Length: 154
Image 1 (cartoon, rainbow, N blue to C red):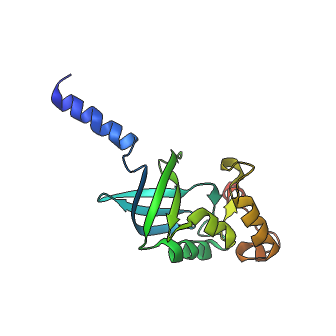
Image 2: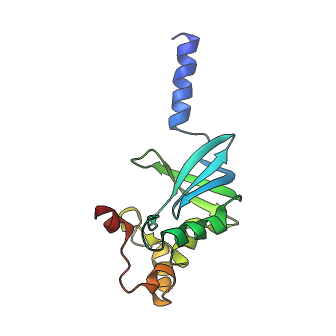
Image 3: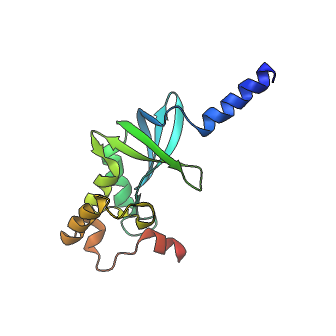
């Protein structure tokens, strides 16, 4: 294999298996209640928060959910632990801002659901969600909040 082909191969592998898989970066954008962009080594990386699903922007509590995540993470250093890539090519990861797990924060404040499809049955997020429900915090103030996965189907 000649050197230019080898370099191209290594570069494409580095894009698929990023070196920043477990790193820190500056949160430069918050897209909604479960997705943000982190600047890592001069590269913007879109990260979807693991184990949760937040209301869509046009859905009730969508703006509040985005603001909750922005209040915690925007312009803050974030620790990112890459878990997977989703079907849209976004990185899925555990994100920590100001020493707070962002997924846990969103669930505890009632601004996101635990995403059953991608969470383990023993996830500690379920107890936070139950506490938020009992306190009628955030989206749980609604008598029948519609999970985003059902809202998207409609």
